[in-house]
Length: 280
Image 1 (cartoon, rainbow, N blue to C red):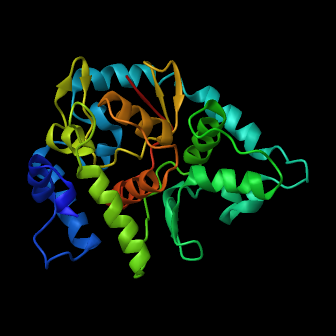
Image 2 (cartoon, helix red, strand yellow; image 1 turned 90 degrees about the vertical axis):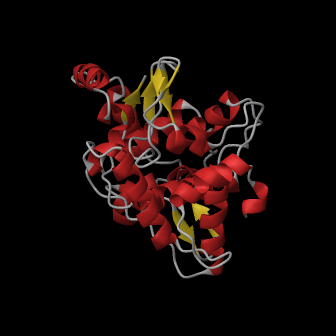
Image 3 (cartoon, rainbow, N blue to C red; image 1 turned 120 degrees about the vertical axis):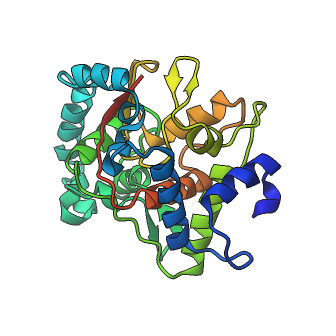
């Protein structure tokens, strides 16, 4: 895996991943090292507050956020998503028929590794699989419909801790490792990795934007961003990040993007779901 990384990426990766036997994959050890890195880097940030990203580490931003959150800009997405979620498909079934607990309060369990298909299943992918299984056309992974559905489902899970499982299955471990590798590998004309911003430079500024720490970074998804003037899914965030480093984005819900989501969500185990959220 490390052969695919730049020297700087290897350095950042070494800050997080403990030294183990060659090529060993140890998610539990990674989890502890990842958690320790961020709690030591930001000792004044309460653990559960990491899910609030930049608002957890800047008093001025936090004050603005609390004022904005009195009339959340994402409320329209929750309301729309709730209506969409309850509306029957043409065959009379609903989204609730596709999910455990009728789809309510389950966001914290996604993504998961599906032993039958041998792949990571994200909530976005599961929603489109549900649509297609019921004779409906899939939604775009980066547009408002998907953002609204996931906003509502996240809202029903607020406060519930991430509970991502990595079964003792070589395919699951491989997916986890591919997600980890992608996160630390530099790409694009700017030669940035995901970790360049969200590990190495977390808490610092790029122009006027404070870089959120990777710990808990997916907990507030989907998010309303002022630069988008609308909602964005996890897929939209990944595609946008690749574009911003002048790289070539993968197709939304590409296997590698799902593996990255698997890795980051596992690293957030125990932290509460805070979505939908808002960011600058």
